[in-house]
Structure formats: C-alpha cells, structure tokens
Image 1: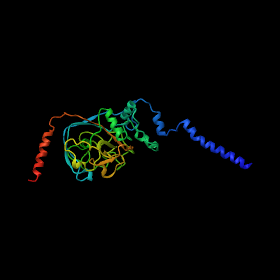
Image 2 (image 1 turned 180 degrees about the vertical axis):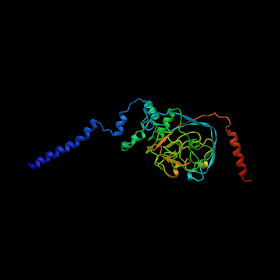
Image 3 (image 1 turned 30 degrees about the horizontal axis):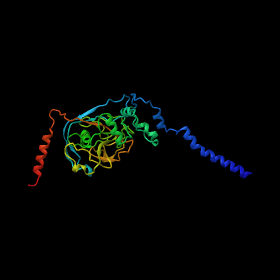
Length: 315
C-alpha cells in the first residue's frame, strides 16, 4: 500500500515538472529588466532630457575637412601603424560627435532596424549607457553602416578618420604630442565617468578641426577592412578600403582603454558582426569638388611627390 502511494506521488511530481515548460510557453518568457525597459518605451522617437548633462538632445553637426595632405601613421607605433607617410585626401565632412542614442533611436523607429539592446547579462550596466546624448553602443559594423546609409552618409575611411582627429602636423593626440592622462574619457584616471560620457564632454579631446572624442569615450567603427600591411601598399591619394578581409577596422580609444592604445594612430580590428558596450561610430560624407581658398591643390602635391621621388631614385 505504501509503495502504491509513493508511486502516485512520484507520478504527480513528474506531471507537474513536465507541465512547467508548457505553461511558460503559453504565458510567454519573462522579460529581463533591460528588455522590460525596452518594451515599455514609446515607439515614437520623442526628444528626452539627458540625465547626464541635464540638457536636450544635442543637435547633429558635421565638420568639413579641407582637401590636402596629412601625415598618416607613426614610426614609433606598432607594426601596422608603419610606415609613416604623407597622404592626400579630397574634401569631406565628418560628424563632429559620435552618433548618440537619441539619433540612433530615430533610425530604429523609422526603419524597424534592430535595437542596440545589450544582452540580459548587462541588464544592470545597460541603463548606464542609455543617456540621450551618450554615444550609441552595442552596434555591429553592419548596423553602423546601415545607419549612415539611412542618413545619406557613409562610414569614414580609416584615413579620413585619422586626419579628422589628428590634423596635418603628425600629432599623436588631438591636443598635441604630450600625453595628457585626463585629456579624454579613458580608464587611466578617475574622471567621474564610469562608462561613456555625453558626447563632447571632454574639451581637451577636440581635434584641430573641432571633431570631438577621437581619443576616448567609445571605440569607433570605420569603413575599411583590416590589412596589417596596408600602409605600405595603399595609394597616397584617397586610399580606399582593401577589397576584402576578415576583420573591420576600429579606431580611437574608449572609456575602458589604457596604455598606448589611446594614441590616435593606433589601429584595432574586430569581426564585423561583433557588438560591445564600448563600440560606437560616426558618419562621413564626400564633398567632391569643394575647395577652400588657400588649399594646397592635388597637382601641387603630386608634383612635389614626384620631385622627391626623382631625387631619391638611383641614377
């Protein structure tokens, strides 16, 4: 008799356990705190106030980089930063700031593109990078490229990014050639920012052209495939991306960066489908045909380069 009762109890336990997954499917999966926050958000990309800065969404702005030469790479850097060469670029414009959460949300709302939602394991830290004027993160290379295309722009080339952040005088940081530990949002000092800051918060991290956050805040996707030796073989005028590759290039430092990686000439690489809370982007656009008074013309650059080559060519 006792054995029969035990069998009945055991059978009931088995039935209850078997029913639990079915019940969960019928009721739906429980949302993580981060997902619940996403699902409760308005479908409209309405302006919000930025709790980090106390202000409204920052206006979009682009900086025009005039045509002319600049020094790319450095002999004092890593193998893939060499050789240091003078490169000529046509006029182009680049976003003054990294693309923000507010701006990216407009893209998501308009197109139905996937949200830059972090995995549930980041539920607690995810809210810290969601400020309206903080740079959007957890976007892949394709996500970034699609956003730029939606805006009628594109990702900057590696050379365009470096010139915009470095200027023309071969400096290693936006402010010059001397390290400045608190110059950008890095992990080198306690600067009051546990994660990314609102774009443009660090005034020292401003390039000679006025482009912000190249040294720190978030690491940025650019348009190129990564080629370790590309600096040796690339054209000296408007170098395009290598035709193919395994990794896409990332440029600049981020809020977790330490050591020499903060140098503007440093190059990083990552699989294009990779997403992380330290990676964002900005856009660029070509300005073919635009020249400012006093600019050094392409033919002058070509003539001077040919003259240099003829002097060094063996007779």
